[in-house]
Length: 299
Length: 338
Ligand SMILES: Nc1ncnc2c1ncn2[C@@H]1O[C@H](COP(=O)(O)OP(=O)(O)OP(=O)(O)O)[C@@H](O)[C@H]1O
Ligand SMILES: Nc1ncnc2c1ncn2[C@@H]1O[C@H](COP(=O)(O)OP(=O)(O)OP(=O)(O)O)[C@@H](O)[C@H]1O
Ligand SMILES: [Mg+2]
Ligand SMILES: [Mg+2]
Image: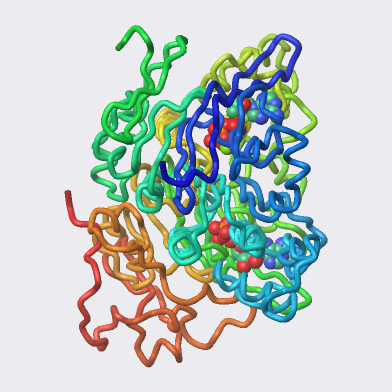
């Protein structure tokens, strides 16, 4: 068994937004992320991807199950406190609306370098300003941004500032929840190329959550597909795209828009995939490393 | 089809402590009834500012100049804020990039949609409002609307929030819809459904749409016409077929080469456009794209190219179209015909 950096074991999480409403956002999810891989997570809007990311970042305490990071049980308060510094430094989150959570009154230089200040780490490039400039350049922004505040930037410039902020601690694990959805294609290409470089040259591990399946296909080593709180399929990316087995995965792949107007217009209106059976199922290894959720009665 | 929207020579600048930012420069375009125009282009090139300038949603620090902005025969340039409020929602409305900022975190979604319904129709009885809210939620594909109506934005997934924002935007059946990255937060199955919905609404109500997106797959799916922006200007415009199959501007070539779908198909790495987007603060002399353009000519560093005609509907701002320019072989003839 290769090195697992993160292991999700029977993870479940429910929200109770009202007295009689229970939302089962995660249901018995188990899989692991290997050290140094880029793991792609895709699936229906609302299927629980962000909830999973937030459990992994200890923003939510899952209702049941365990998450191991380098063997440390993240759901156990005591173990977590013991490794607090390591966990804070090694895990970073870039999320969907990162941009909107930037402090609007802080200048970009402060925003980007704040994690170094909080962790009391001396800037490797001499000064905080040099450090900020370096990180900004890697996400395609130049020094003229340093003195701006978030309101003075475009949506994507803000998002790139939050990516730079996440990278500055050179974390081991980057949980990227739709990090590039708001960026244009060329900058997406640039950031994805940067992610790939961080993986290959520095051994970063990524959990890459995205809706852009072409990007997932291009970037990720393995991909998991979620629906309704469950992991329905998991396989090496190439295998998943060439041989999708679960009906939802098939629907998902067939909905990818392709940059070709005649081909797109000829396509019939999309019909939604059938709802998932309510029965609990289990992941079955159909071919080596290719897992599919199957209900007990189907097997 | 008559033109619903006609924008003539629109410019927007911001005066900031660092200097003057030219966010939109001399942009003109028109949009027919029931047509979808997609605006694509790099981050920060002015797509959102362009839409907001027309909808008059920019902060006071923005200086907007335009010869005219005709929407359904009404000139929006020079209207007072009060008049604009009346037109908003009914004549036009918008869905924006970040649904969280458009929604009120303190009100349940149902209430927010109801407000959008009643704002233009105050005398509607409560029953009818409720019915209309459920109808709208159903229209944008929100299941179990009764339950969802009582929930708050932060309890929704990104996709659900965007659907709520869509429902609010469609509440008063607007003639013109600005959709700024409406599906970037959605999974592709729901994206496909929302895009089908957009097309549906457009066919049924003859709504015209200005769609901002950098996903050229999305653009291919719904756009009739495409405008490519760079550094505040429209640098190429044409029908979707013309821009996808026969792009003429080097920047448009760059955009296509950065697409993962095409990179995978051709088995090559992604090629980002080299260099950085220009600062709009002190634009360089000549064409702001010149320093990133491997096909730049000497004249590009001197003089910005005007929009030149390829066909009656297809225009591109590049000196390569000048009869005196050397012939080059483009890196791609666009996407090969299927
Ligand atoms: N704080 C909360 N309170 C109540 N329900 C919540 C909360 N956060 C999320 N949910 C619900 O849990 C489910 C999973 O949400 P989550 O945000 O994880 O989905 P997602 O897969 O990230 O979706 P998207 O792709 O749209 O971002 C959704 O049904 C959502 O409405
Ligand atoms: N209120 C403002 N004050 C100063 N500059 C602004 C303001 N709003 C926008 N800008 C600038 O105007 C330019 C255009 O911004 P805009 O938001 O239109 O970009 P965009 O094309 O929508 O990009 P994105 O794809 O990132 O959303 C940017 O350079 C931005 O920094
Ligand atoms: Mg999410
Ligand atoms: Mg924008």
